[in-house]
Amino acid sequence: MSGASAPRSSAPAPPVSGDPFDVLVIGGGINGAGVARDLSLRGVRVALVEKREFGSGTSWASSGMIHGGLRYLQHDPEVTLHSCVDSGHIQRIAPHLVFRIPFLMPVFADDPLGAEMIEIGLEMYDLYQPFKGGRPHTRLSPAQAHELEPALSDAIEGAFTLDEWGIDAARLCAANALDAAERGALVRTHTEVVAFLQDAGGRICGARVRDRISGEERRIEARETLNATGPWVARVSQMAGAPVRLRPGKGVHLVFERRVSNLAVYAKGIDGRDMFTFPHEQNSMAGTTDDDFYGDLDRMEVGEDEVAYVLQAVERSLPGIREHRLIHAIAGVRPTLYGFGSYEDELSRDYAVFDHGARDGVPGFWTLAGGKLAAYRLMAEDASDRICRALGVEAACRTHEVPLPGGEAAVEPVEVSRRFGVGLPAALRLGFRHGARASGVLAGSVRPPRIVCACEPVLDAELRHVAREEGLQTLDDARLRVRLGVGACQGAGCGVRAAATLAEALDWSADRVSREIAFFVGERCRAMEPVVAGAQLAAVEIHRAVFLGARGFHGAEEF
Ligand SMILES: Cc1cc2nc3c(=O)[nH]c(=O)nc-3n(C[C@H](O)[C@H](O)[C@H](O)COP(=O)(O)OP(=O)(O)OC[C@H]3O[C@@H](n4cnc5c(N)ncnc54)[C@H](O)[C@@H]3O)c2cc1C
Image (tube, rainbow, N blue to C red):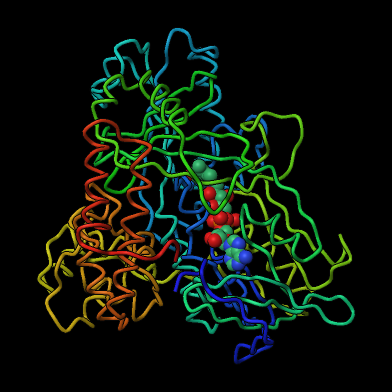
């Protein structure tokens, strides 16, 4: 049943077994999942609830870079330092999930800073590179730059290289949540906090949660409750009577089919903002915008103007960019801390932990907001330290030294490929997502693994594994958990096959299968619409009509 249409019960909700927990964490983005893992490693009893899928909020919509943020050096050097140091930790605990992204920064005659000033900035950034295993910058002539990246504009006067790292952000969220679960935490996706529990003294002592698939409501009691809901922080803290103000900033990325450049390439918006095009897993992404956002966080749209703005910026560095096929757009909202009077781009990317007992007279309630994906571990450590002090727990943080699931040993894709008879590309992708656990994913399969989605590729055995062992709940969740349908097919090639695999693993009814496919395909069409025109738009409409009309899949507005 869709969460939107689920009946609201007026009877008192039953408790979740095992209550009360020490800490209830709300939000399975990178910050909530990171805190749940940190606390679980310290022996704290945690419940983590996420209203959709892990990482489905801002974390998935990020550029997925665990970088220092060259541009924060000027205004926010602390943010650069923290992000670089934490990037080094993340690379050590999850080596399978990260990939190097070498950058080219072209220099044009009309660049206001000029090559010499840019190089001074890069020399400063070089000082931070050792923290995250990055190489120092190099300065290139136009010919050298074109040799590395033939698609670069002929107008460049030279270029610089710099070194960054990318990560599968949604998988990083899932890995943190799974680790928490393996250490005893109660972890639930598609479970939304709809109200807070308060004792007679006004202390928040947990929350009432609604399962958005079954519609059932439950109480989860906890000694401390953390609001880690990213851009939803303001809404959730309001519910608890402890207002937190954010300055949410919308960011849009465009996604191109396959790799459009060898390296990541800096671009400049018409307003002078830095943007980039970068290879990301099997695709390329370009972005991002940064605009104050006042709309509906649960129904983000991408406008034609946003697509035009990004393409115009990229075109200056890569003039042939419009010849490449755009497959979809992603929009997300930065949970930026409140600031008045600055342009969006200049707002601090710092974070804050609010103890609402001390701040607002609402004891038992905390908020973690702001920050960056790249520094999530450090933010989680800070929030966990403070909550542990309140609980009287003395155990220290260990998240910088204990590997995330799959990060325990080196991945052997050739061995996986030979042993299980799967092609090397599939074995490589499996190793990327599951690390040292890749063999375990296939070992449980009773049938020889088959490719369900050729874009990445994704195997049916992996889908069965995440359904049975990782608590995956919906077909659309597989888009985030294992990157189903995020490549050229956008669900057209894999939706039905993947739904059949999940139906078998999770015992879905025919009606449930129909609703899962309808929602998944509907969402893929919605993501494609802003970036296609003419014949491609007609193809999207035919795709939608075939699935939702002729083939009769129908139902869910939301999972
Ligand atoms: C366009 C863009 C690009 C970015 N690029 C980078 C980058 O390259 N590197 C970097 O370091 N940072 C980047 N960031 C910033 C980074 O993505 C965020 O700081 C980070 O992902 C925030 O994580 P979060 O857990 O706080 O929020 P989220 O990921 O949004 O997680 C919050 C979760 O709470 C859930 N939730 C909300 N309400 C409830 C409720 N009532 N009950 C239960 N669950 C609820 C939501 O479903 C959501 O999953 C980028 C941000 C944007 C928008």
